[in-house]
Length: 613
Image 1 (cartoon, rainbow, N blue to C red):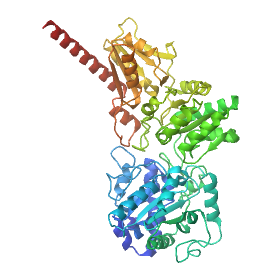
Image 2 (image 1 turned 180 degrees about the horizontal axis):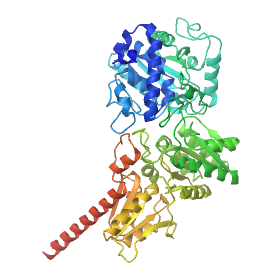
Image 3 (image 1 turned 90 degrees about the vertical axis):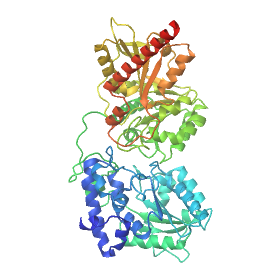
Image 4 (image 1 turned 120 degrees about the horizontal axis):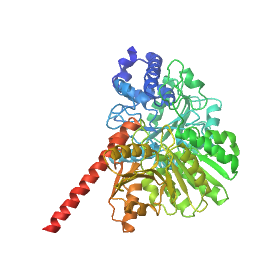
């Protein structure tokens, strides 16, 4: 690691002789495999951009020149070359190095939003700012993969970047033929044709920066340099220098291979080790999971539903494997649609399928549905269409950090007219609620679950108006009603046990469907002295806030207190640790209930004292 240890910043890298660069690339790969295998993270994407990142930091002077990574999961090499090797021991762990660019870590990290297809719009704005401030000698570089280029926002960026030929922006298209899955659609076919056409840069490069043959990018107005071998540092460096010198919008088309240089990743044809947990670095094999994940449960039940109903179709936005739809796609290939990284299109296309008599199931990460909110409202809900959205990674996701936590769905979806949302507490309820969702014919439905093991089933002791009573104290007053939303039901039951031992009567109810509020729930609340809601979504506008409003509207005077996640961007770390921090463990819930009861007692005593005066 002698060469890597000598790099404390980009200036050191630029001092290395060109003959040392292949050896440096080898050291970087060895470092990444060794460290990421211990922490988990995005291994394949970073192994694929080693030489490209080295070349960018030799040609451009960061942070004076701005380098933006889309989506940011491929920035590990960038972090190494900007002086953060020690941080990799704590990669994606609480208090440690983020798995994405982070402004708090380094001045070299420009953008930390890790949602796809945004870099070109950021670059457009930065280039305009440079022009306005008279900084024409500075470069703006946007690194975007062919997968991210399938997103609509990326095309809006391309369209605007060529609007002013005198605003130089360099679009580095890192083309490895895939996002999580192979790149789909016409763009994927066009890039494949460019990759496999005879000749490459610089043979097809002309003095004015145009390609010898026309292509999509030259028709838009870009200069085009490529294809360039992304695993040849010298070739990348020469292409980037040529692009910088053109002083106009340029696409540098770099071809690479995800997982390059690490045989287990190269042999992983499904995802090329896009994202991994802890693995054995020698073999690339991970330990077997201790239980069935929520995603696996959904995948199995989705196939069962598909076998019974040929009107059920599935839509994924470039992630059939991570969202659990790969098995459905393999079994029913003519009823599964991968639309690329295009959540807006996924939702609107689902609306079209529903108009045509199908029942689409759109499976996306919770945080990515934010991007399609307008389509959920205006294209699905407005038309009262039967579309089911399945939100994986809802609540705290853990090591991927603030842009990947699925903490907004319960808040933002609660305002959508006609939408119904369910939060299953266990695997059996996930299966039941999925079937209930696809039976709905007069509006959209949503099903949410976390990135975790599903855990044991929690049976109800009774059912009331579609709600499950999970615990009811016998022979005690109805002191506290705990309303448990989804997978936090287990923690709520732990809290109830603690409170009962201390003499408090507790009822624990799982509404199952949390959007809208079950009309019977305010009545149940009225029979208790205190209501405490518990959810792994934001407290602001969440399920608890809606129940408090419903109780007020119904004239129920029982106090309602809400436990949930704060209105904040939450750091990366272990899921359970972050839930504990938010007061969502059994002990912390019980502690909060005791505090609320004490506060209510103090307030009541104060009112009595005021009255007697």
